[in-house]
Length: 293
Length: 299
Image (tube, rainbow over all chains, first blue to last red; front, side, top):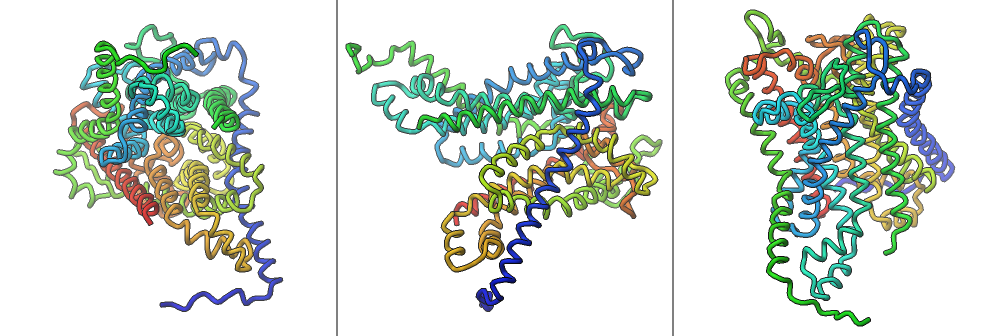
């Protein structure tokens, strides 16, 4: 056994000074972690704000994307997020329900948990490879909103599953027992008692999913997003522009784009993502405050 | 109340409906497993053959030129590029992130903690393409004025990755520290320790597994990060010798070249082989992280 660390033998003044110093250093680290990012976000808002106008949001891009608005990118992102929601909300909510109400503590629940953690950890570009192989080629959906949306849906499934599971598990067990004692079946209990109480929590997860999938670029790069396509999509079989892809294209692929246009587009994307996210945070905060049990 | 409390036995119809619904729930419950297997299958189908036959050559060459007449698929420079960016960024983000986590969990007042946690969560939500945008539009000129010939280089990538991972490290680190029972803190303070002595000698050792998990997930996130590094690392397949050298990572290679690769061709298969490697690396990192969490829970 090694010698135990000596007791606090140094003079009290030294120890208190060290304590203050540590507090300062840790505070400085916190500032380093938060301030640059905050400064950058403010800078984007400052530089991008002059570009934002009604015309910018509702007009087609013209002259090789160097002028005009970003309407098809916004509409395309709505389509992609919509398709991903149509897939991931039903599947994710039912899966969360399974984990909370049916799976118990056995090995199968363990494996499912592990799969969720890994699904969340798989790099976005690997999801893109999967989407290309599975949806675009194997199922033959082609490069389309459907393929892109499904790829996003698979990728964001863990967000919805974990939030549904957490929301349902936070409903007290007594509620279920009371309901069973009235003679209700397991599904009736879930439908009439657990689900209504868990609904706001599930909604938080869904909003987070929207924010996440609106910002993703890599998964739609090869599955559904088009580089420059100044028409609005009419069905899920069309390709479409997307906001995230548009930021990427403007910054790296297209020459002679004005700074204002670049910053404006980035600001719209950032705004969409952060608005949805703050909404989810606010909702969660409100729920925690008004919890009745 | 006049309504009878006892319900009738459910009719056969209801039972049938419930049977179907519960079946559906069970099927969806396994969806995560199905998709993980499907990802493995679809990527493996395209890339595993290539990986097995070419692995020796891939690992012994630094020359990645898949579109030459005699294509070569040397991985070494790409691997070094990935490790370079990830390593550099973690060198900064791990100490700073964990220090900030300690501050949030132990030193900040309740009000500041709530506020900072919201800030951190919002920063974590910034999409990776926006980080790439930041690297190209802001860090690029900044690095050039600091003496770099090209502003899009390994250092730029490392800075962007560090800024991206910091929020994740702070929030996971804070969770790990909060998970240490309050009685540990009270015992240390009762022994006459200052707050800093309590943190250094009691809290950090007690939370080390959770902190390790935070770092592991940070590594996984960095390795898999695609859009930002694609945009800012300068895209040169070579082994970096200085901070200002441009590099290229595994993820960026796939994102940049998949659009041009002929479906089913050798290049296409090679890119899927890179995908298998990435999948494998993050899979192992996540398994280790999960194992560490479980070991902590058990004792």
